[in-house]
Image (cartoon, rainbow, N blue to C red; front, side, top):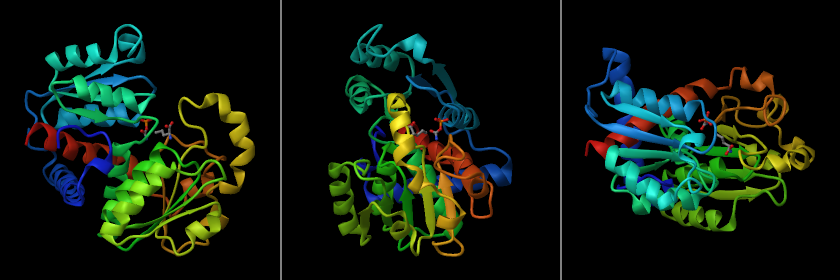
Length: 307
Ligand code: CP
Ligand code: NVA
């Protein structure tokens, strides 16, 4: 593994190895109060074109707890592709740091960073996918059920970057996945095609539907995300009219398995895609999931930098 741009690039064995490493590092931290300094002396440059709480802080803390350091570069500082070309940013930044994490608008920007960087590049969210989130999500489900293969994940909402990473992550690990989106907001056909190929290898099933009830039937996990992603703000009003039937509320949760867990990558727009009652209710694992960003990313960083 040279870069970490999408879960689609990983073999199932690589996905499982990252999950097991994340669990090991999380246990080590809990039991010993600290991790071994596997990344002593290593540095991570973090390039952001968009706001962030989880990605920024969890990467920073992951580096610190592994003995390294992270450097936050705000949207105004780098101005990817505006102040200088994305290729030049990659060429220069990779002379200073040991790895780059980038949160970008267009996925081709993170691909271009990877193409011109001398050091590993990690995708911290693009319009195409959110692979670090996807790994943290798999970790959360894996810890909760102590398995993934054969479980059913129902994603209800926009067929966006987060849905894409879940489609790849689920089908790499043998989890069934059902995605319910409004007509016109389904995951991209190329994404579904790839996921179905992975599913054929792992023995899982992919269902794409417009019916939230159908998606959540018999689900072990219900997942949702914002209706309007960063960069799509001009569509907010239109989306607010279309998405309400896809809200994850108590009535919908009641149609899944009784012990279903509810997930959201956060930030949440409470009262839109998820109700307070569900986000703060007994099925919610939202904050374990947020914590797991740090543990999952430690595994990614170690595999790229300490291998
Ligand atoms: N889930 C997630 O990526 O959160 P941030 O946008 O706060 O980083
Ligand atoms: N789909 C959301 C995820 C935020 C973490 C977005 O791209 O804005």
